[in-house]
Amino acid sequence: MNLEIVNSKEREQFVSKRLIVKIGSSTIVKDGDPLNRDFMDNMARQISGLFRSGVEVVIVSSGAVACGRKILGDIGTTTLDNQVAAVYGQPELIAQWKASFSRYGVHVGQELLTDEHLNNNRKVLEDSLKRGVVIINANDPVNDLEMKQFRISADNDRLAGDVAGSIDADTLILLTDVDGVLNKKGELLTHVDRLEDVEDIIKDSGAGTGGMWSKCLVAKQAARDGRRSIIANGRSEDVILRAARGQNVGTRFIPGYMFY
Ligand code: GLU
View 1 (cartoon, rainbow, N blue to C red):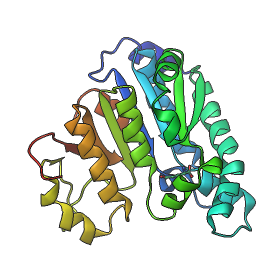
View 2 (cartoon, rainbow, N blue to C red):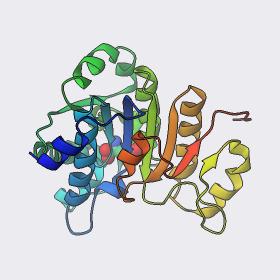
View 3 (tube, protein in one colour):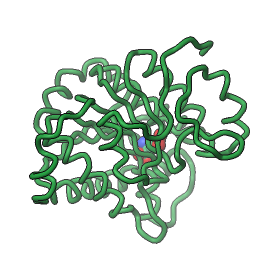
């Protein structure tokens, strides 16, 4: 167990009390290794600090397909192939999450969901969050629809938004590998109010490829529902701790007037 965390962060009061962190495949897998274990250890350090201070945390973790594809090596790209990859990737993913959190003495649970489960999952998830950190992913092997969408867009963003809604989380953080929503010069927009003001910028930029616009839609909806809603870079230092303290990280979404 990491005593530094226990001693220094245990009694810290955070602004967030119930937080959903979504981590995408490109952040979690690594060249030459199925998973970016250092990154996952770093996430576990921050989230364990939160958990010990009484903050409930769900990680919506992608990476089953990408990790499984690396493990299996020689596999095609059909929906069926990706489902098979998820069969092999998900256990590897959860094993690493367990290993990362065990360094800090925090239990890790897992839920693999499809849309139909979301509505009757609230009580189990809320009770589970009192005992440890819950990792959620889509149940890809049995979910043809999700997998077909996966070929087009990163839809764990939507899943994270839906989970946030189902347990009324106060904070949603969508982590990506760029600093947030960027303008045409590549500069960070610290907040987004009207989505229509950034639609062209995002669709032209290619940053966070393809997924950024869908992230913005999810983040905006969460803001509208009264959550602190942030898109940020998973690699910026202590990003989750700083967000949970209410500090400015990444792009914050504001529930003001909007067309979308
Ligand atoms: N459920 C997919 C996986 O774990 C990822 C889908 C997504 O990133 O949106 O590989």
